[in-house]
Length: 132
Image 1 (cartoon, rainbow, N blue to C red):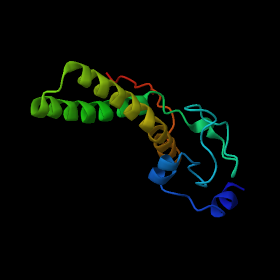
Image 2: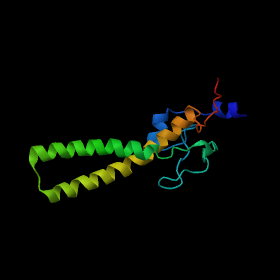
Image 3: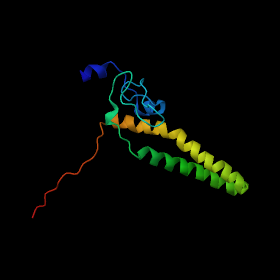
Image 4: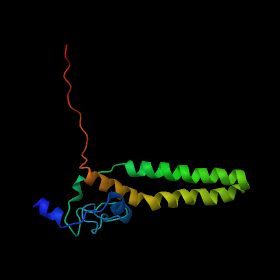
């Protein structure tokens, strides 16, 4: 049955479904039930999102990327224009906040789509026998 369900959907790229925050299988259903809370399943193709666990990956990537970009622009602006300290506070902190919150949903959706496409699962340790 799984094969027939997959055949009826045009699976979008992980980047497209991530940017649109849509189901990684059909590309139409909503991925989120809240701002960052994943829905239980797709409302179009009924894909169970139980496999998805991006953990802290999206937050790490977003904070790192946005932080580097905003701080680089801030450093250039300080050297080039020497704005007053209050202008720096009034621009840098909102830029960091808006940048992180604005990109967190699509990055998380992209990582969920990557988990689906690559059939990723939680890693585990296997016992290694010592040879003597």
